[in-house]
Amino acid sequence: MDIQYSDIIEGQELHMENVLSFRGKLSATALNEEMQKINKFISDNELKKTAPTVTITYSTEENNQGQIMDIEMLLAIDKPFIPPENCKLKPIFHLTNAVKIRHIGNPMNLQQTLNRLLEYVDNNGLTTITGAYNVTVKEVQDHADLNNMIVDIYVGILPNVI
Image 1: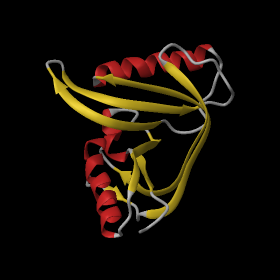
Image 2: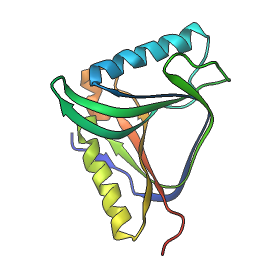
Image 3: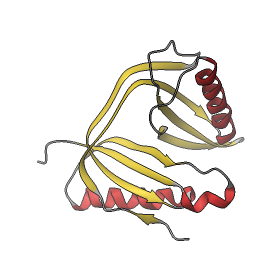
Image 4: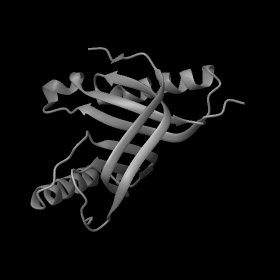
């Protein structure tokens, strides 16, 4: 299945409260382990996620162990909490004046959708002020479902066009 994407929409917002934030430089395997720890923390403390998981990758690098990502995960929780080790509580996360595109398809092709969004930004004389926030709308349950993943990508834009 080819990737699909929605029209690009300007003036979007992403708002979350009681956000559990984890940021680290990790391999994909270590990231999965951290996510399992966070899910256990949520379950053990009778908390509930109130929105899809949001990620932002600040950079990637290669080393002798493979690809390492500087990544942040943001999870909106239903009530205030004391964050676990290596995590922070952000009482409010509010991204304003963003452009958004929806990616439908294999996550391996997410970069193509982001490139389309960034091309739009460039062609319209806009200036980015954030990285790309990936909001997982429909997660992959198994490998057979890989081509049906849905991710909304938000990029903050400078409110002034000069």
